[in-house]
Every structure is written in structure tokens, then in C-alpha cells.
Amino acid sequence: MGAETKNIRVATTPQKPRMQRCDMPRRMTDRKGPPPPREGTPRKLAADRWEKPAQRGWGTESPRARPPTRNDAPRQEGPRGYEGRRQDGPAPRMDGQRGKQVVRLSKPPLLIQPTTLWDYPSQHYGEGMQGDQRYVGATPSYVIWNMIQRYTKEGDTVVDPMGGSGTTLDVCKDTNRKGLAFDVSPFRPDITQADARKVPVPTGTAQLVFIDPPYGDHIHYSDDARCIGKLSAYDPRFYQEMGKVLDECTRMLAPGGHLGLYCCDYFEKKKGLAAVGFELFALALRKLRPVDIVSVTRHHKTLAQGNYRKAAEEGNFFLRGFNYLFILQKPAK
Image 1 (cartoon, rainbow, N blue to C red):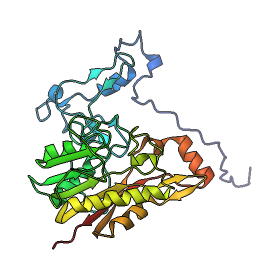
Image 2 (cartoon, rainbow, N blue to C red):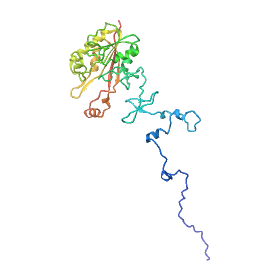
Image 3 (spheres, helix red, strand yellow):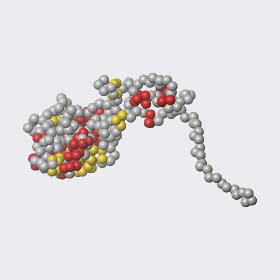
């Protein structure tokens, strides 16, 4: 051929690179023979991946040793607002019916509340119980504890003219105060029977008077006809009688002493709002000067129940989320 030979490029299809064999471990299905037996539930096996410091020996020369972190500690669900942590002591016991661990929960430290919004996730502080949790409408003990710490010293007299389950008496014992409690229907022997409108306490002898009155007739406190809790919050007589109680509280206070008035408003959908807090505060202002107003967060179980929340949303009303703590002082002479 006389013609010059031309360089012709032949198009070829690129080949895919061959898969390289990797050193990945075999899948569970490729394992020869049955898997080794593993005892325990999946939850227990997961918990055993990291052993306790006493078993692993943190800080030793163990090749798997590592410093513990806060994530290693088991977290238990506690009451709303805080997490319970396992306390030192014997191992937790097992619940025979459900097979679950029953873990004691530690409460947050009891501290002076520095703002006008108070919150503590338990009705009682410490390991014991102040008052009685069976008593409907019992006062949270940390509220009384804060008032005692702020406005009294050891040996001072603290009076509760509506003693209820005796929470004030128990807090006074814890803080070395002289506690006196009265009620028309005493719940326990160390509460003296007396009407809050006429308390057998000498005039001007109490450094602190704390009172948690009824907010209406929605709770049955007593069969005694003198019980103010039989009067409705919509009845003007309720405020007339509470005015007499507040006058008696003022009489018992020493000059410069303080009154703690713990109360809440009341609401019925058909009747509307009864502004119990403002009405009682106005009555107390007749003879006492205001010190401050505190909102105390309520942890009533109904606040977390779906049917109550749904009713409030659909009916366009509000659930009571806080209590008033009105702090007043008797003028010094």
C-alpha cells in the first residue's frame, strides 16, 4: 500500500477496578459453629460493658482502664424538676412484682431562695417528712424553712394559727425554734385546739406567724362549724372571717415581727376567678407593711395530667401554677 499508515486510536470500554479484598471481620452468619452462650438480658449485657470502678480498678495499669465520666453513673427518673441519684449505702432492693430496682432518690440541697420565684421539687426536705403527706393541702416544708431562716433566730417563737398536719412544728424542731400550732380540728396531739380568730398566745410575743388558710370550700377540712374552710371563696363572709384571723395574727406579732401569708386564687369555670390572694393581701395591709411578694411553684399532680391540661386548653382557662407568699411586717414602735 502506498498510502501512509495512520495512527488509529481504538476506543475501548474502561474496565471496572477489581474489588480488593479487605480485612473486615466476618459477619455473624459466616461464623463457624454456634455463637458462644451469653447470659443475662440485653439491658444487663449493655450495662456490663463498663464495670464499676471497684471492679475495673480505675487508675491501675489495666490496659482497658479509663477515667470514669459523669455518663457512667446510672440516671434514674425522679419527680418532676430534678434527677435522682443513687446514694451511698446498701445495694438497691428489687421489686418482686416488676423485677425493677427500687432506688432511693436524693433531693436537692435545702438553700435560701434568693429570688421572688421559689421552686423545690418535693413536699418535704431531707430524709424525713415534715407534716403528713396524707393531709390534703399541706404546706411545702421548704417554704416555712425559708421564712424561719430569714426572719427568726434560734429560740424565737413561731406561731401557726391554722396548724394543719403540723408542718410548722416539725420545721421548728429542725431549726431549734419554739413552735406553737393551733387548729379547730387538731390533726395530732401537739397541735392545740383553738379558733384562729382567738388564739391563746400573749400579745406581741411571736417573731414569726405563718398561716396557710383555706382558699374556699372545695376541700373538707373539718366537721367543726367554726371551720372557715366551709365558706366559699365567692362568699363575702369568707373574707370577713379571714380579716379577723389576720387581725389576730397582727396582735400576736412582736413589733418588727413578720407574717407569712401563703395562699392561692380559686377558679371555677361557671363562676370565674376568685382573687383570693389579692383580697387577703389587701386585708393584711390594713395593719402591716408589705415586705415582698413571692410566687411559689406548685407541683400538684393534676398539672401534669393530660385531661386537666386538655380541658384548660379547650375551655380557654388556666390551671393554678403558683401560690402567693405575701411577706409583711409589723411596724416597730
